Length: 623
Image (cartoon, rainbow, N blue to C red; front, side, top):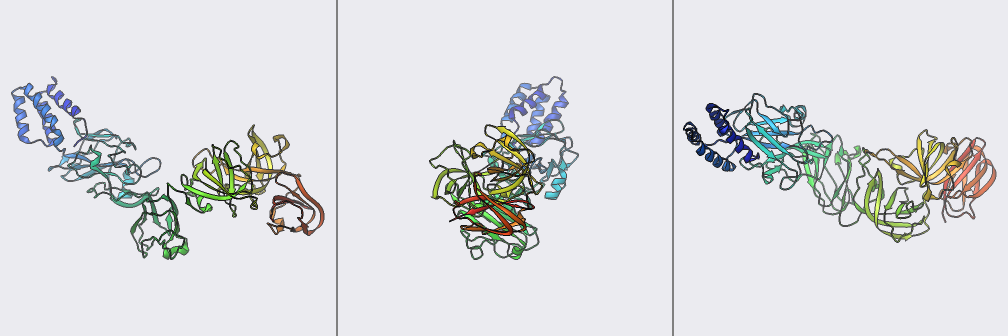
């Protein structure tokens, strides 16, 4: 059952017998060790000894070859029985280990035994009893923390995640056992990063045949990167694991972790509660009527595992009944790879909350919204659709389609979600126009651009620090906001903004309306946020008032607006999105009402000049 090449062992055996530098006693000692390891019957050993004593080397050579050809049916006493080569850790693994088993009827002293391949290690003076296990690991403390066992820590090296040869030799260099494991069929694949170790199903079987290995079912309750660690180091191998879950949710500390999961229809989801505190999973339709079907594990209880494989696509909400008011809730988004599954647009934008990883990357779905702005990729698509709550999505494709982008169109885009440099996009298969001439949402005033602003309609009053990244494609304005944060404003040539880099002086004040975007070259994707300009309005270099200094109502509006301020207002101006002045009027007072008769529908910039400075805001004119 051992995996070392029979030719290697045969050559080692024959060269020992025929080595002229070896004494007769050295040959007999070597032969005894060889027969001991492979448990060849003692009568055979006596017979071969008699051949040697009679110096019948030709008969010995023939018998050695016959023995080697029959070794496949012999069982090594020491067997490599369990391997953990890629635990579900990030970076350097700390839970790699190799377990050996004494399958014989007599003890074996491991002193001086060493690995010729796989890792670097020499075993100490340990008497391994029949049926006993010995574990050597990359990190003894980690093994104690997770499995609660004391193990030997190997001297160096690490196991390959893609499979490799492990070869164990005795103190004299004789190969005892070796395994060439793999992470592809017929070898189990779940041990490659999904939680379980590799276990030999029966120690009498050939451990070079991947079909004789299984994923461990020895649960530890320890969850790393969403996967539970399974293994039985130093103990009897398990009966085999149930199917390794695609996602594991840890239940504890009054939360579900991760809180939001996205899985393909038919995936196995496992919730694990290792606490003595009673929790449950309740996704019943009586509680969440929008769930496609009910699911859950019943009444709250301590220490349990719950598996569920959803068969209907859609958004599932669930809670822990005793702790729902502590925020112990979660979602399970299930998609059909062969169809478009509808999810709320804000839900599609969920990230892992840590590294900027978009959970819906690769999911086929549909998105509906109103086009805001222009197409930034005339030879394909790069435009933004935004819903009534100012939550948006970039529509991106290298390939043009019949649809011609027009601001104000309400469209439904069917396609597949994709994340590029932290930016979430939908790559369209189809674009359906539902209506035209729709109003834009009111731009949200921001003093910095963050993840929740990505693909939203924004406005900001900024001071120019510098202008750079100038090319035929556009330029970047590096600015500071009133809140003290830095905002990079990208002016793309396709936006048609009538300002050249030289028109924007350092220290000047600008009002920018645009879309929040992200371009982060490196993981984690938590940086690179910027404001993609649709309008850039130069503001006279006077004091820019805080947004709270003046209130404007109603907004959206159709006929008039009313401005209320603590300061005296003496001029009102309104500008179109292209910078054209639509209205100007001299006024005098802190409460001013003006008529909007004759103004076109759309999003416009209102500028109020007071005795303390200027103030700007956006209004949406609808009719």
